[in-house]
Structure formats: C-alpha cells, structure tokens
Length: 258
Image (cartoon, rainbow, N blue to C red):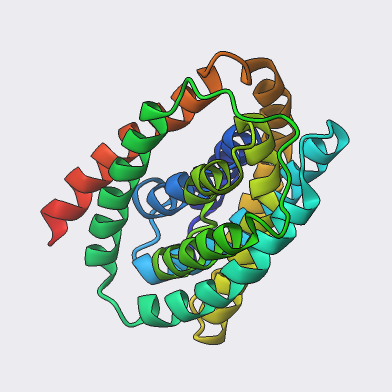
C-alpha cells in the first residue's frame, strides 16, 4: 500500500496527464510512467506501466468526448487505426512484461527523442482538412496502426505520441484532427495493455482510480487549449518540446539505474 501523500501526488499527476492528453492527444503515458516512478514513488516499473496504461485509457476516453463535441474526430480513421493496433498492443505488451524494467524505460526515452525530432521537422505542414480513410490509404493506415500498437504494448503506453504522427503520415489530416482521432486508438491500446498487465497482477487499482479522477478534470481543460493552439504549427511544437523534456529526464534517471 502507498502512503496518503503518494495518492495525492497520484491525483495531481493524473490532472497533468489528462491535460496533456486533451491538448496533444499523446504524452499521457510519456508523463504517466515517469510521474508514477519518480514522483509518486511506485518502485516496480512494470506496476507503473500497467497502472498508467489503465489510467491513460480512461483519461483518453474523457478527452475524446471534448474533441468529439468540437467535431475534430475522424471516427472511421480512428476505428481502423485502433483495430489494427490492438493486435499489435497485445503482442507487444506480452513481450514487454518479460523485459527488464529499467532497460524498458531507457529504450522508451530514446524512441521519444526520435519521434519528437520527426514532429518538429514537419511542424509547418497544414494538412488536408477533408482527409478521410478509404480504400486507397487503408493499407497505410492499418500498417501504421499495427506498428504503433506493437510499440504501445511493448512500452506500456497509450501510444498517442506515436499515433498522432502516424495518422498525419498515413492520411495527411491536420494536426487538430490527428489529436482528436488519436484518442480513439489511445483508449483501445491502453485498455489492451492494462488488461494484459492486470492478468499478471501488475496494476495498482486504487492508484489508477485517483489518477483517473485527476485526469478527468485536466482532460477537459486540455481539449479547450488544443483548439486555441491548433493553427500555425504551435500545437505540434508544444507536442515535440514536451517529448524532449521528459525524454531527457528519463534518460538521465534510467541510465543511472542501469
């Protein structure tokens, strides 16, 4: 059992994660895993991964409601991406549970740096507002979904920081639509990973509950902020900078523990 202060820190961490998910559609687990390990004080990295996967899935579903009301979700694309990704997430999470926890965090941070660089490189791309998923781009969307799902499951993350660029690359949709649509897949990936970890007893249910409670409040605020920052590449820049900052911290902490 954790101390009461740790549960309070869990709720505060959840609000930050929820805000980030609503704002950029990703970064939930990028923040959730290190916050649970380094701030809340969860000593087992696998428990932190399993618990954060459940919390991020719930918070993503909350953020999805706000984006759906704003009309920024392309449901067919989200469903296709999620369907392919769930298969990958199950396989990836099965392998991830057997991998050393500290090495997992270190590799996680390296992947974050690469994705952040790619996002900054394409930050001025406007996208095609009317972009849809159809027979022409379906193989590309499903392929990106499957690959993202494997990474999502292996690292125990919702995968939003991979799903957003994956949706942009496979459909050319604007970043605000990719953010909203990604939450469909983040929810599905997170639940798949969380159930796999829960089967092995690697989920702290009480911590997940307080994390989700804080995330509901943060998610609503993040969705509002996303609509205000969606133009001129600002949202993409925020997304990339967030990734770099957290990745640097995780590399520092996990490298010292190896």
